[in-house]
Image 1 (cartoon, rainbow, N blue to C red):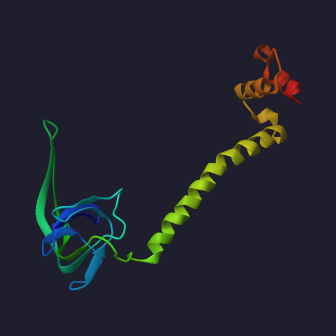
Image 2 (spheres, helix red, strand yellow):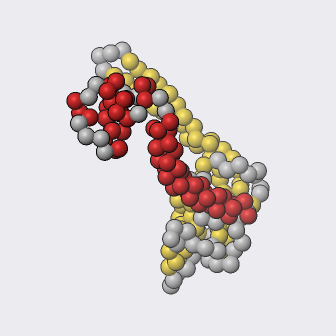
Length: 180
């Protein structure tokens, strides 16, 4: 039995008792962690694919140790310019051991994660209503704002919207008088 799970922003194919190096987790050594974002589970005869994640599925693991990965040398050079930069990087990693793969019936990690998507949908709804409100307020502002601060092109657009004809040959002062 194996599962494909998203851990710390990366997807891993994991099996029971397998050791995996993942990006640094904010968990102490020896503690147990669980990952709810299971994308696929294969138990030999049955393959379950999530859309995007499988509801109720969970992968349990134990943090073995925190360490740094091998050093990676980053060397940049531009020929004939005298530009050479040598830099190194060691990735912070956590070694975990997979202890269990639960296909269904697992409890979600926390209630706070469930509440967050509901807030996002409310934000989307309010953002959808915002452009309509902006359009209405823009029309009100046009009627109440000082026309002398607008450009000739903006004045011509307002004249066109109000149905005034012959505005293309008018000067700014004449447009303001026609719109007032």
